[in-house]
Length: 103
Image (cartoon, rainbow, N blue to C red; front, side):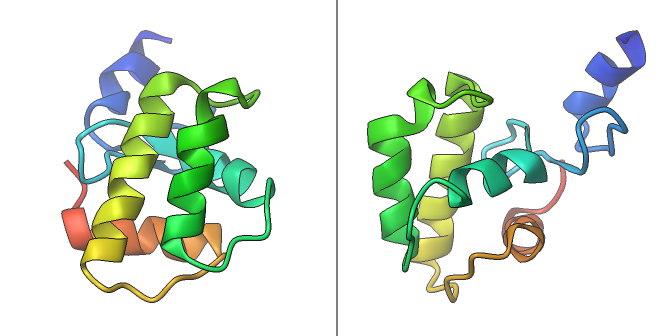
């Protein structure tokens, strides 16, 4: 458990949470959380996901305010940078890591 806490801030892989991203904001969320969000609606753009997170994110089971805020910020940055929208959680994680880098 102490090892997990140590790794979270470093963007390392945590075997209990799946692949972790430090995100462009420096806060952690998992690919599983991205998958949870994408499974909650018919999204066709980054803006669709951002609006859903604003309205529903903190009420969704399995998401906490920190992960919702970090994910929202990263999705906003992808939108602002003109990244092509995808519904593939693995690809989104890769895009976030490429754009902001693991910290």
